[in-house]
Amino acid sequence: MAVIAVMQNFGWMLASRGLAAVFSLIYLAIITRSLGVSGFGKFALITGAAQLLANLLAFQTWQIIVQYGVNHIENGDQNRLARLFRSSVLLDAVSAVAGIAASAVILHFFAEQLGMTPTLARATLIFNIIMLLSLRSTPLGIMRLRDRFSLAAAADSATPTLRLIGAVVVWFIHPKLQGFLIAWAIAELLTAAAHWYAVHKIGDLSLMLRRGKDVGKVLEDNPGIVRYSLTTNFSQTLSMSAKQLPLFLVGGLTGTAAAGAFRLAAQLSRSLTILSQMIARAAFPEIVRAVRSHGVSGIASVISQTIRVALVVSAVAFVVAILFGQLVLETVGGAEFGRAYHSLLWLAAAACVELAVVAFEPSIMAAYRAHLAFYARLVATAVMVGAAFLLVPTMGADGVAVAVFANSVTQALLLGLILTKLIQGHDRAVVRGEAGNSRPGT
Image 1 (spheres, rainbow, N blue to C red):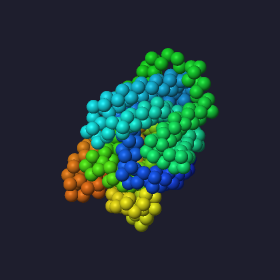
Image 2: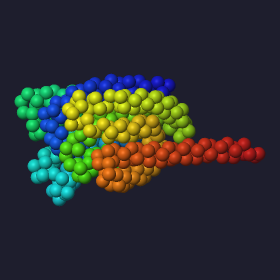
Image 3: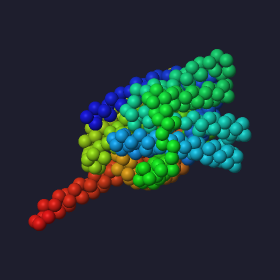
């Protein structure tokens, strides 16, 4: 039943992301042809920097809600559930304020080192403030906890839809960098509003307002929540930052034109990364329930079935990238963007590796070992940065793409090793327990 639930959840997310993929190709074509390869590089650096800065201090409150909310729902404890929701909103707000302050400091002192002019730095800060204030991790967690993936999919589809509408309007009125940035900012704010409206439809917004006012008791209600919150924050921050870092390596080492071509290739390969994220997010609630019911060994069947599906999907996707990658690059962006074809292949290969092991990290986190996943990401990111500096002098932007592939392979190996050790350790503990219970006189 767990696998069926995962596939149902995934189906709703796939419908949303399928729409996003189609719309993103259209609005990317509008932006790239309006701004050119160098202008699109600047646009990519601004939005990428904003996403990077937004993720530095952001907590993955959706994971916290799913991890601890399951127990409160099973126990029918509405007060503790409401406190968990309220504390998640508060955590989102505090991290947003801290993120804005950190962004202002970083851009004030290091904009020149990041290759940004004062105008670009100012635009990045404004865009980043809007992104940070567009709080939607908590409502997303509530919808996933409630298994309302259809509502979550509808809310998520607001972003690509609004971006497409905004891109078309800007294309006709003011097809300049500032115009597209304004459209993106409005899309972020309206998407956040759509998420909170969905929570209102479920009824959990009124639950937060009526109950759970003593937020200070959330630590008592949820043992280990501080450590879990910090480790998931560090791990996901590192993960999201690592996805944006290659763009800055290309921009800083090879220029904005190369960054524009690389960004388009990364955007196309990102569909595979998004696919893996969808599977992980769809599976996470079921993995948490399996761990609570059967221990770590209870997730083995979910992992094996997820891997089989992911391998087939990733193999087909990589063949499609080989056959049609260059055509799509040139169709969307123009002939100048075709030079990113080899980067696209390496990035697609990296995404396929992540897709194949998509259930590993959620399983490790569900077993309360998020710190081990963080260590794996830290080592993999160090490998990526080191490989990029070694390869860029001879391979240019393609060297950064190879480094991204090395990051994915390293991370997959380490996460697989950690998960294997956890399952084997649990099985040995069970065997020892059974042997002890079977001794004479026990």
